[in-house]
Length: 206
Length: 206
Image (cartoon, rainbow over all chains, first blue to last red; front, side, top):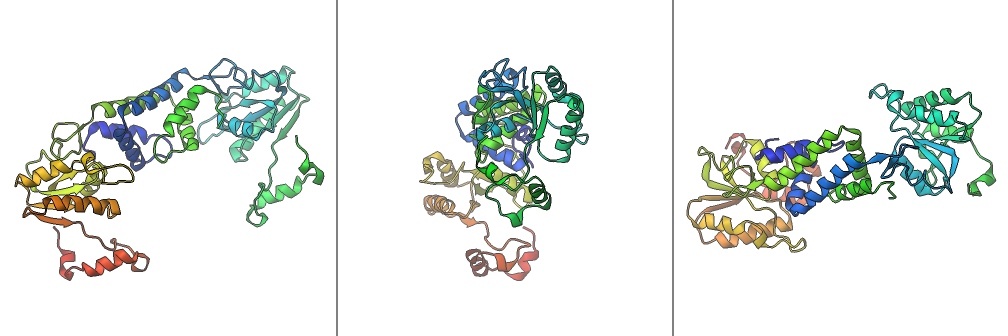
């Protein structure tokens, strides 16, 4: 791309560093800002800078938070003995949306992935293991995505807490509610039969 | 979406104001910035602010430019008598890429669109008509997209310059090079027959 302006080129280049944003999309976004009043760009950049510089992570669960301890961990009504292990804040938001989980979370900040250069030390695994060893936890639920990286991470953590007597589970894998059987992949369908549940349990709430 | 942090929420909200960026995508982009070093966010916001506040428009063709007169208008080697009328800087970049046009441009800054509230006065039409009336122009090529808005804009300008004796043309519409006839829409295919060109002209360069 040949730009008629260095300022425009620089803005497009920076914008296209974001994941999934190519040069063309970046140009479209930048030209949109140019058509809007100057304040709009000010609001956007200020919100991004404030977020990047002021955001904190909950000292207990490592979720993104404005306070030392996040809103979820701060609620005494939640079950602090049951910890759901997730990858990032999006998973916390997704599970909170269901309204089915009354425990607390532990945000790993990623998955073990040698290819992407993410080792166990870059995640908050030590802090999770310490929590378990402190004896205040009775159940751990792994809710990582079922990829090689997710399974590796699950297993790595499991090995470190295997000698404690707490319950360890993973979220159920199976056919999504509303999905057609014939379009499901074999592994999922196979697991959904292997891990079938008593009929009446479908109509219980947690 | 329920956010665990107001700072995060604000950044996502501002990001999702951009066209084509929904809340989920905005969250993904913002979390990406959060994983990157703080400078990254600084570079991005600085580039956007510099662009928004310092960018100028060429006083002759209204294209985005860092100088009073853009690089294209400033070239004495280009034919200043032939003006290609386009909607925005992206069209200039696309035509420049072909290397087929040696004239100069006139960037309208949009198309007449009553639905989007864009009237002729918001575009640079007056300045184009003045250029034509000054007698220094011998040809106008309309290169707006062939939508109702594009055609309306073409016609609006055409009516104002109809009494001058310059050449007025539009870019050719037809089947794209490499495209299959059977998949072309009727209007395009019809026009490509109506406006057929002498065989040997296909092998000429402009």
